[in-house]
Image (cartoon, rainbow, N blue to C red; front, top):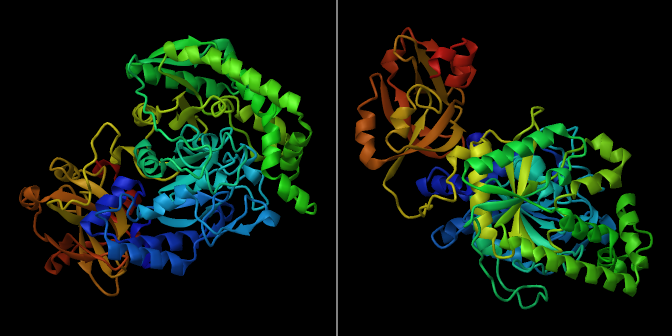
Length: 613
């Protein structure tokens, strides 16, 4: 299938921008790939509604007419949690009876579209954004991509899994109690929760209107930062929108807070405790100083969210719907939680407000001692079976480190921080007062890169993406580079790759040729090399696309021995690239390895590990 051409390249922003700029990819080609992906064997519980194929193609064509120069998110695919409105699409909040067709697009989504991003679809969630497990939807439970026996996290389950699986570059979620952070931790991706009011929540089905935040799931902190730059801004029609954006520097003192040892809670998960200790070591090795703080006031704030008057606000959000649709079948555990808010009195409400204000006053002093707080994103992770047996108790455990954040007006970044021995990801969360988003992202990016190698559940490498500490050049300013398709020893990790990297070569994509090539092995060459020859009856061969500065091309070509040469190669998506070919006269005596589909696969078949470098 031609759309396999970009099946394995990274969807991080920098990679897509480089490929678009180099001409090896167009939005139309990317859209075809994404259409093929979602028609494959993907998890159907990720999506509730998808943008139709013809609409995606039309959007891509529209972008190609406009061009990338003025669009900061040109051709970047994204998803939206299905409690956020997109004009002309259903909004369900994971409740079929609640469904309506949105008349307007939420401002946060519209800003993304105006910036050139491509909406792929709307994702699954815990019904009415009530839950942290991802198991409370009549549309199914998205699978954890690292182990399907475990939960994906919620309530923004589909958004997180879509990013982790490489179905989109980023996704919008929402976060009231941790819904934009817990799923990030369980899926090895970044979860950015801005402070309340920074991003408009107009067009969002509210959970707790005074606390709700639009959140961002991304593969890297840099990508999350760029999305925030687009969606942040005052919205006069949103009564909770902040008119002024205050930016606060963090990290200046190098001091960060961690709960006292007796206040850390992992609910018996020793692996999580060990992983958090390792995370703190990563911070100290990066020059930061841990300071033990009294975490009890944070916990008291957290308990107000589901044991105090904010349950009444959650009930208020759908009171009209519940009154008009008594026949609506809510997920039982969701109904049980929300219905509790119907009986909360005004006296109880003001008691809770007074308690919160006193705790805010007390905790305000902590920021004089530290720049930010670091905790696990979640104390543990549960299996689907365990959550089914105790849906409320285990859900409550997951909010131990998240439930307080919006009540205190804080911002937070959930970042990957390595893996458990069993293969599940571990994550940490950084939190600080409003305005610290940019600073927290830079610190989180540093720790992410120190502890983690891959992006989400994909094979894509974090090291191939630019850090936030690096100024990112404008990929759409014409650069003097040449795109070269390589099929052998110049690929990542193989003996000749340094011929590219030492000259400033950068990987664009892992891709394949059109199904019209044959591959041969020349064992007499040292190191052994393949030869690629065009043949209409051949097959599709694994390739890597690299860019090389033009001023380095001459010295690179001088390293290419006969019978290899540089020609033009057709890729699986129908586009063309300069790349390595072989002169046909040299094929006598060579071993044809086309059936293996690529050089790496052939090396593996002969056990040639020593040839891999």
